[in-house]
Image 1 (tube, helix red, strand yellow):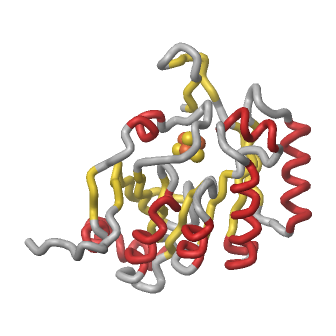
Image 2: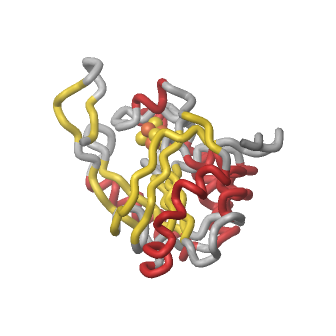
Length: 221
Ligand code: SF4
């Protein structure tokens, strides 16, 4: 077996879910989940990902060989591969190299919080067909309370991504987050995003259970 070149980007693979329909983009998609995220959302369903910074490392060629089994489904339905996580754009260079191996009619999508360096956004913009951005809440206080992060990074990157790919290639998810914002707040957030030029908004609600795995952090199910 040949070894990858030293500068080959590797992806910390947590799992692959095939034959998803209408969940993370049009057509039949394969979700590729990777480890690692800079945020600490209170209702994160991926606490294991935050704890385990690494999955099993895979090369772009290795991933291509795993997912190409669904080539015909992707081509027939307008589907493809969606990168999720964790934070997919931590691995922008990997996605770029993976994209270069794929048939051009596969759709490559990325679910992201945009809490990443600007350079990652630039690299991903050239490789990803559609972005699914979970903006959490653009209000600085609510964003920080919910994620532990700085909203200015997300907003700056959202503007940058819009400039690079245009709003038609961006779906912005606008959540109602129980205990952190209200329906009125979410409506204000949607208005702000429409005023910025985004038309593809997905308003939804985080569904939380009362059951906590660590005593104070509810889980989405
Ligand atoms: S951005 Fe996603 S993976 Fe990261 S902490 Fe928030 S919910 Fe979890």
